[in-house]
Image (cartoon, rainbow, N blue to C red; front, top):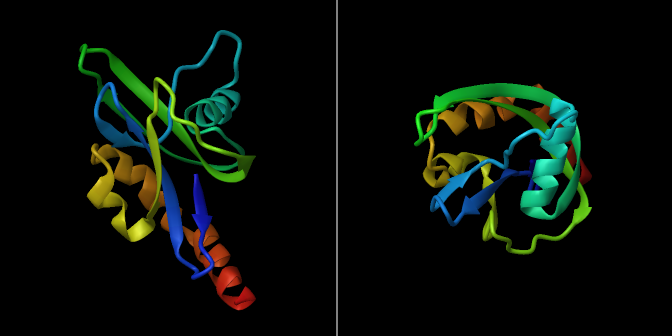
Length: 134
């Protein structure tokens, strides 16, 4: 998820998972019969309490987890519609982080590839629109 602040800065929503003590992007596992996009929207809602609308697909990541399982994660650009975060067993904190500061917070360098895709023109257009609105 990303948003443009009133000051025209882009922020990305990061989640803290207490069982791993890491900062990451929201993600999760697909349920049987669920589309990949529906899974992404559901998982963001479950982890953050925020309902969102999905935009463009972003670069995915591949890695081997701590149990030796190969993982493939797909991501979408999303923007908040409504909702409110409440700490839960999976995520105890969320943080809107300036795009320029994300690398200092994220635990896994692989997530930077996903966030870097937000530097594409659609974000620049949104930032310019926000600046014009001011």
